[in-house]
Amino acid sequence: MPQLPRIQGPEDFASAFGVSRETTDRLRLYADLLRQWQKAVNLVAPSTLDDIWHRHFADSAQILPLAQDRPGPWLDIGSGGGFPALVVAILSLDPTYAAVPGQPPRHLTLVESIAKKCAFLSEVARRTGVAQVVDILSVRVETLPTRDNVALPAVISARALAALDKLLALSAPLFGPSTTGIFLKGQGAETEIAEARKAWDFEVDLVPSRTDPAGRIVVIRKLAPQVRKVQWP
Image (cartoon, rainbow, N blue to C red):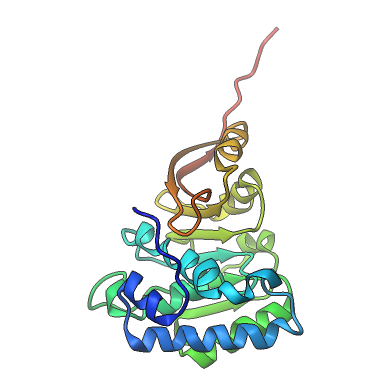
């Protein structure tokens, strides 16, 4: 996919992603809330506040087509300010991005261990009208496999959380046979993949980011720990 032009506001976003006015209105409200809460809670790098539509909204939205063939539950780990999961939730209510046309939108679970960030996520979900498709868990992702109410997701996502080998270790207990991992990475993605292969077997697609020429989206399938052969003397 080609690089996107600079997304400077709702009109540019609507043109690039083909969404409705209702969707851009929800994102406008999200941007306003982010700026308000940022004064008290560190949600994003301060230097990116004037570039929310490109650096955060468009960067998040670009991954949704990579998951259109996985319409089941979505798990986002280390959700922080809501990227990419809250943007995905907002777009999932738009007819253009319905996971299965004519069916209810997909459900997303956001996992964030910092309570103040969870309060922000809950406020955005409530105010933008996506609370019905979003669960927000104020827990560490390591505790999720012990929760009976967390089903194996169709998609696991993360953005700016940890190196790929760490992400795979966190994701593995919840990674089913048909789960897809979608992880937004920078220019070091290939190095991270090589490092992760020391402990994990997986299929991978490396997709160029549409918002950052140096960025990459790492798409993981069929994740399994490596089976080490025993060397007998």
